Length: 147
Image 1: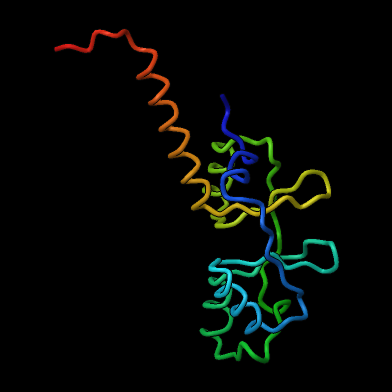
Image 2: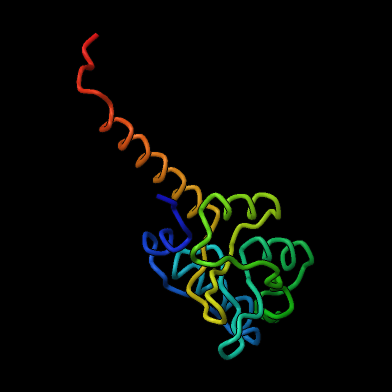
């Protein structure tokens, strides 16, 4: 059985936490803290326009001496360069995230945003897939395991 991005969304849930590009970075940080997440999707009406992560904050606010209360999300968000389809395999997802050095990937089905997955979600999915494979292998082995 292929383990897909859709499986990851089923495991983690498909909650989508987003913020407007007009919001302040401070408001975005507060939301990330409240939801215990490391990134927010930046949505303008129903359109995905970027991603804001804790890394963006660290590199574009703190290191530049800016104020999170005076800076808008639009000023520091990262553009969405890559998305993934829910039927793509977890291995394809890991390959893309590793090659492009991505920590978060929006999951799109056509024009519809289904969720977002993190590199941590993908690693968890790979571990789950490996455990399942091991269980299937062990249950299919002949019964005499005596040494």
